[in-house]
Length: 217
Ligand SMILES: [Zn+2]
Image (cartoon, rainbow, N blue to C red; front, side, top):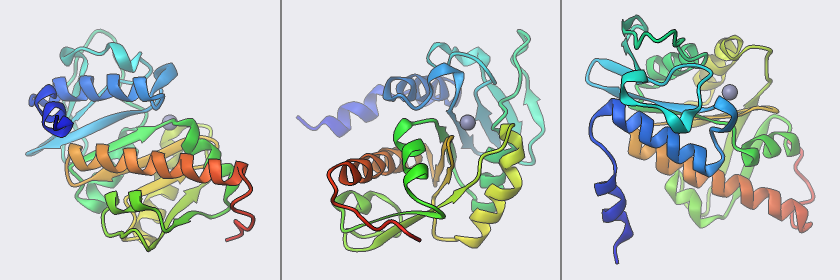
């Protein structure tokens, strides 16, 4: 059975529904528990974004905010819902990278690698690196790590600086917090996030097994 075809057919094409489906999936992965994390999707001139501080696995299409490309709220879902605290970070990625989708994960694997590495997460010679844009299996993959702040929106400046100074990167890690990952569309953002999480977990296990001794960088 070709599972990729089945998976593609099972996702909605309406962006509001798609944000809900992907948030639910990321909750199942452990990337969006406790109301954290999520994904936003750009379609034509609109950006679709889940609200702040809600259970990401229980969203409905009518809960989704719609923003313009310059960050103005075009459609507010009402119901006392608040715009995502990630929205300035998502907007920074859209504007600096012309991304088609940006996701934010609180994956424990992402958090743990920020405690194993100083300035950059590094891994090399892993087949799953092929799933990351611009990387081959024999390359060294590096992801910048920025320091966490008390509020999500306060990360905007350091995230923007890291994006500008690492033009090949499609992810930025946040210490003790998680990771921002983007792609040219939601499919690339999702599949790259799966590859990144695999590589984070691989690195953690390699450290546990004593296979990596020098992570200075
Ligand atoms: Zn967060």
